Image 1 (cartoon, rainbow, N blue to C red):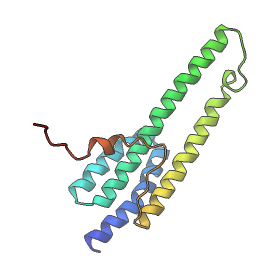
Image 2: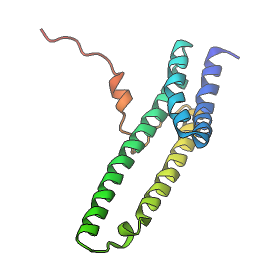
Image 3: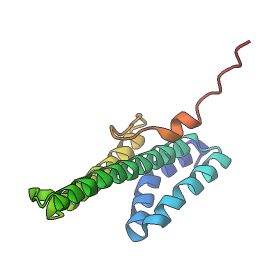
Image 4: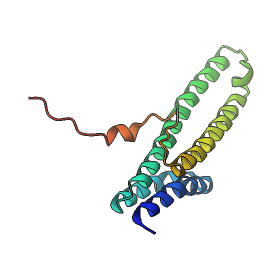
Length: 145
């Protein structure tokens, strides 16, 4: 196997591997992503490195979106309890499970699409990915004189 085909193979396998690890232990999968990124960077595997970075961006973005939505729903539930009102899905706590299920389905579909598009050597960026790490590792701008 040449380095290019090895890079392609690792790029295709990495999303599924990280998804399987994160199903077992959520923090294990989340901590394995930066480790794999630096390993792939050290081994000069740009496709696998970019694939890992995109998955890490997506994971962090969905965690941040979930945190914001969770805070918003908790605030609505608090207001409903203080006002002695009943908001149908929020007061019952059912909306949190619906959003969690939708987030899990979206994450699974994005992992599958990332693997498929990487296999086809086409770029893929999820719609809800904020691109935090991609922006941080961008090209340095020259100093203005």
